[in-house]
Image (tube, rainbow, N blue to C red):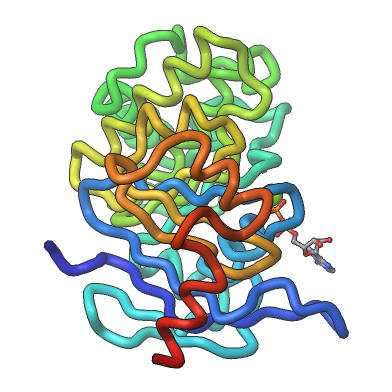
Length: 259
Ligand SMILES: Nc1ncnc2c1ncn2[C@@H]1O[C@H](COP(=O)(O)OP(=O)(O)O)[C@@H](O)[C@H]1O
Ligand SMILES: [Mg+2]
């Protein structure tokens, strides 16, 4: 098995008196889609924001390509090539696609002017490299895009920066069938290009269609970390709703640790 690109060990995170993450371990492999599943409130978004450096973990270790790293802010994650597509997308409706993709990281000419042509070219190339053909012009305002197109732009924005790991928080939650199809194809292509992809989803069809591994969270603890081909829909639903299924689950994991 190849080495994980990104690995988390024993991550704890509390908000005031409420502990949301308990000793979470997560491995993200290059060329694979790791699905992160769990019920509402299980801690998925908190975990993603901790990886992104938005929240500071109270405990735990982070490794990138096997080397220990620290995340003191979003720039630390970005400098390693870790990008997040947030649940609320964080796109600006009043800006066009190019402006959104380069927001805060604009290309400049030698005389410090905005290098619009370079940015347009790179935006076009990035969309083309992802085989995105549904967007007519990169100068279209984001407000005029469909939900699937917006998600596509958000993903393209994340991979514009030589990303190595992309985490997608519920990218298909608000999408119809055809748009979900497009986004899942895109998720698969990212992994096929060698990126480590983390897909958060509630939809078991999506998870089983596109993922290589599944990490299930239950009340902020990892209930199971499985190869997708070694499990099935009903087992994952059980793990999400009760934290255990047959011989696997939180109780078994805890028993193994103390053995
Ligand atoms: N900024 C915050 N302050 C306090 N509690 C939070 C904060 N963010 C999340 N939580 C709590 O942490 C738990 C996990 O939330 P979240 O990570 O959003 O779960 P998920 O994405 O799996 O639905 C929830 O109980 C939520 O209320
Ligand atoms: Mg969430």
